[in-house]
Amino acid sequence: MAAVTEGPSIDEFVREENSSAGPEVAVIFAGVSLVLGIASRHLLRGTRVPYTVALLILGIALGAV
Image 1: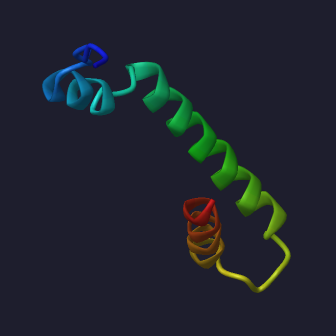
Image 2: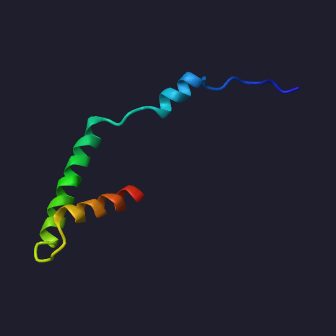
Image 3: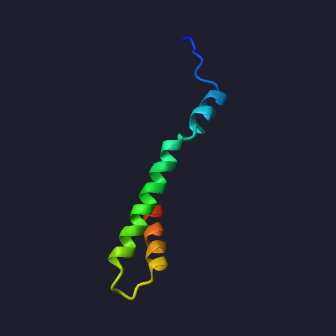
């Protein structure tokens, strides 16, 4: 009969799965959000598409990815 080795406990597994990202992720998120907002506003300047509708569609598309 083979010996059974003990793996990581449930607590260790959950702790690894719930590890949060650092503050640099929040800064990157804010920067990307600002750039996307500025770009969409600039690109939609001459059209009749409202800025907020474009941001909503962009957010849905990014959320789907």
